[in-house]
Length: 231
Image (cartoon, rainbow, N blue to C red):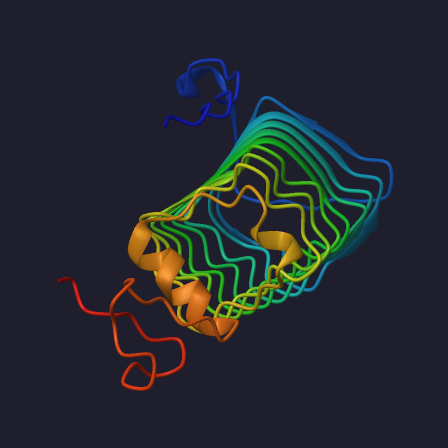
């Protein structure tokens, strides 16, 4: 089973981008074809900022407060987005590469053709967001909150989902086969369409107290949530 890869950002050659050592976004600002490098915009606030066809590299965006930030065809590389609060955030054809997203809040965000590669996103909050088809690869998503989100068709490739919440999320076609999922918070409704390995299926069965036994196993010998003998 192969998932559809998100579309990559449409960017001009990087040498053609306008280099900037500052990101000073103000209300109603438009950034286009910029290469923002090695600067800090920490704790800045702005409303309705649009960024198109740009690259952000080694930019400190910690604790920024943006309302209606709109990113299209953007690559963020090794940026620090810890504890950001981006309300009504929209991202189209965006890649987060090696970014720090600790405690980032993208509540009700809209993500279309978005990819997260090697990101540290413990405690990130994406609840009630639209992340259909999103791709997470080698990400630390411990205790991340996807509750109520539309994750339809999303892929979690070699991610750490320990303690993450999928409660009340749409999980049809969500592939977590290569990811760890200890203490994953998920309900029976969210299991419909979730793509898992046989071992993960047994682990999920244990969460709901099911006892997986072979036909002739001793029903009193196997523990609750346990697995019967192979013979």
